[in-house]
Image (cartoon, rainbow over all chains, first blue to last red; front, side):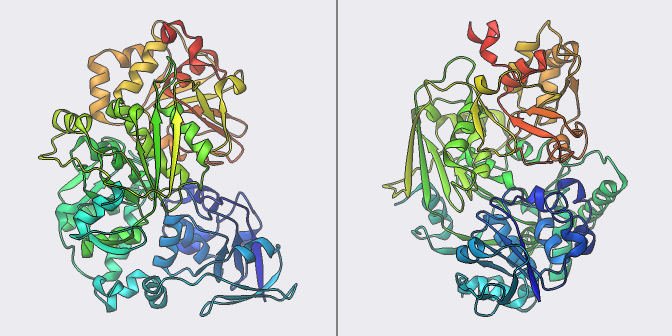
Length: 165
Length: 419
């Protein structure tokens, strides 16, 4: 099962991973302190494939890539949010952390719900209450980065011009 | 034809562009600092291609410098070894990155600067497009010299009137953050203009693009004018000629009008930047640390305001008062003019330049239960230390008045301010 971990509006990068922990770039090390102050049991209880669910403006604040890296390091499957702050959005796509924008899901899902997220088509099924949600589709050029598993992998195979070709 | 960002992007794209288009543009400079460069180096190594143009890369050591612990020291080592290996020409360690970028002349009207720091929006004060990105895209920029951008819609903020004594650009911007909210500018270009902005000196203008980040904006822009050109010519080594790019028949998503004439000093209260109150509503709240620093408000003129209030007086003995000049150039000027001596005589701790306290790294960390009043731009929970501490944001004048009493204090209670 994929358990939902829910977070509120404007979840900022300091709350995702405080600045004082950003002295490492190791995702597994960062994951030990992810959400440490807003949800202390997350880092110890999260299981691979669990889903982060946030409100509006998820990831606002700093440009620190440590924030999506820490979430990826915790082995969460993806982040579903009502909306994303712009740098977090780019960072998540660039490092290969799947994100889905879906206000309906963000409003309806409660902590502990069992979710089935289909990253390929953006369908989110809530096994706990039987509700189905559809995430907003990503633009084509973003999908090219996401499909490659991040911008670094994309550039190993392509020229940057191929992004908007 | 278009908003200021459309005009700037159109020049770079070589054709007229409009909001909503996706562009792949050449960038002029690629900025990163000690907090974000190590991850950029990792991405660069993984891509496995050479640097396109080392003259576009500008690195700073400012977030935890000099290193307060071994891990930070190892980060610096990694960066310094990289600079040596790649023979990079631009490395700075004597000031907050955004201030140094401006002082060293990297920021000019119409230029495109990407930075691995969210407050890279600051460069908009010169009519440049500056925006914050993550480290991986900085590594991508080193290799490709390019970055993709979606041309944003624009919110125009039209300000008029003159502020009263004791009220500064910081108060105006804090009030705007309260008005627009912390996601009020998400993905948008926020264009600041109007009679009030036209009449502002550069050190006060900088605050608006700098804090456009706090409302989620992709960039904050002020069109270059004579104030900009004079500043660039007299205060920086930047080489002209400089183009004064203006919006032309712009179509704005939203226009916000505000008269600043009746504004009073404002405070952004714990725990959100849009939790804004007039200082009169929070006056008397006990403060354990006053911090004058950061890319927002630690310029010479800010230190001058603080020293003007503290001259010949003593700060509250139970309040830590820390002053961190934004750059060595500012520090030296304040030394020469006697401001540093005034601040020290008043009981302030004057630290070396950098970002340390603002991100809870060193030089002013807060204990549980402590409350700070700072000239910073951001007050997220736990940012300066303990998650049980609180951060309030205000102008340098409010900070200085508060330093004297140890309680949030209206700067208009200081006779020198209102006379």
